[in-house]
Length: 284
Image (tube, rainbow, N blue to C red; front, side, top):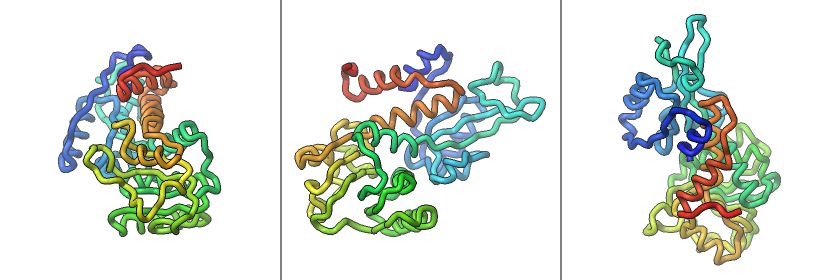
């Protein structure tokens, strides 16, 4: 996706993936800074750790409590900070700083709106997971003025911490720890856990505690496999469904725009992403 966008924009860049152990994150990021990387993306479990590493944190990233995009900037002779990707000659900079951003939060809402054709104001939602991705999703759902949010997480203390954050920032949203009452109608069930990445994984939802036939729409942030066991169960129960492909696309286009300062070629990137995940071109 990113390389397709980079090519379309005529940039002499390359987007690469690296496995980095959490205890080596600071060394890896320091190396990227020294090599004058334009920027980088972070995935779990690095999104929370990076908050304490970057030199500057964008207000949105601070609000959502996670960094998934970093932009490196160099300081010019007159003290101005210039993004490495927008500099004529990045080798002239003696001082480099890192700035952390979060492009996940807005991407979640945009994808839900487009892929499930639903607004969130006044809805009742169930969120599975309260880790880095879950916390961002919970706060973003609350900011969209859902009426009631059920938080479900294996470690209760994490969901309690997220609930406190929501009650502080969005006191009008009712937060409930645990599943809704049997038979209660739910507008959206969102999976922010990693359960579903492997075919051997258990379902992220307890079907004895919650009947999917009472759920209108199910969104799984996992995009590969394209149809998780949760989405299969949801389809069988008559729910509208969507995977995390849209979220991945929009957080990626936003990151590219942060690095370049220019609009990203969204449709080019969408086509590349669809072809990679589904193994075929996007129809239409």
